Amino acid sequence: MAAKNSGMHFVSKGMILFAGNSHRELAQSVADKLGIELGKADIYIQDNKETAVDIKESVRGKDVFILAAGSRDVNNLIMELLILTYACKTSCARSIIAVVPYLPYSQQSQMRKRGSIVAKLLATMLGKSGITNMITMDLHHKEIQGFYNLPVDNLRASPFLVQYITENIPDWRNAIIVARNPGAAKRATSYSDRLRLGLAVIHGEQKDAEQENIDGRHSPPPFVAPKPATAMEVIPFFTQKEKPPINVVGDVTGRIAIVVDDIIDDAEPFIAAGDVLKERGAYKVYLILTHGILSGDAPKLLEQSCIDEIVVTNTLPLDVQRLQCNKIRTVDISLLLAESIRRIHNGESMSYLFRNIPLND
Image (cartoon, rainbow, N blue to C red):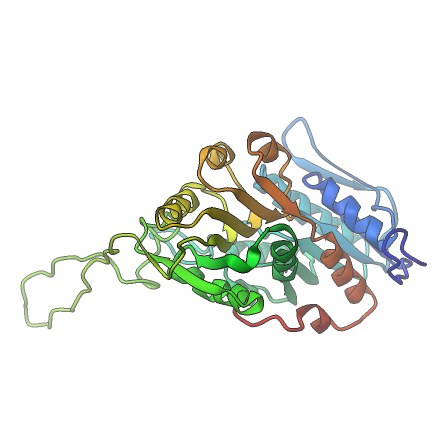
């Protein structure tokens, strides 16, 4: 059966694509590119606040793909995915592939003080529900793949974002790629190499809220004065880490600064980066990111900031955020999701989708 819009050769017999309630627009776009209709299922919250699923067609012996994407009510999204997956499993689906462009709780993948690694807990829950494979995109930490006892295809959005830079940013050859902090330097280096542009790194910015409570098993603990020595030796301690004053390593004077990262949620660190880049002489500042969570007042703060444009993919719905910020631009990645679904269903290699993409991307 030929695809309706893309000309993609695709045999739809034996597969179904379901979508949750969170990002129907993306799900419909993927279905259109595959030349199929979305699967029929009612997913709703009952009066007692429990999530219920009613599948309206047979899934016996079929490859079932479930697209779940959203950030507004992430816990309901997870329950929808778990219940729909288990319903397909008990209805004798041949395989169940979760398509989760932005994986919830991926930012909680390290041990925190008196906390837990929530990303590992989610991986266990999804695996127990009956998922046989997962498709996601630009995991916050690639090591999250190791939490799953099933195949995880971590797709990359960078080819689409690089294309956007070359086609939509005027005078992009006068740009410089900027890493917001040293931790983002590998990703920024990947972009600068492919675009053949210079690289700058912002160092010494204010403390990152995500790293503030990371447990000492991953980073040096705060200084604790040792007790007076006894018969046992005194254990040496690190002094507390202090960041130097904010500085830009690299010349951005008279250049377009393109800040690249994987997620934007809290806007303040990016606004601070934009301010320092403008102070150092950059005449335009672009943010290029994969996932635009933009929770709380982030869209309003970005609208009032010195940042000229925020470019994100449509892994998450941004209808509300766009109303609050006219600087947001979206890049459609539905074609990549559709091609990955087609290849898995037809038993084709996924390596084609990762060609020429470096490990650090």
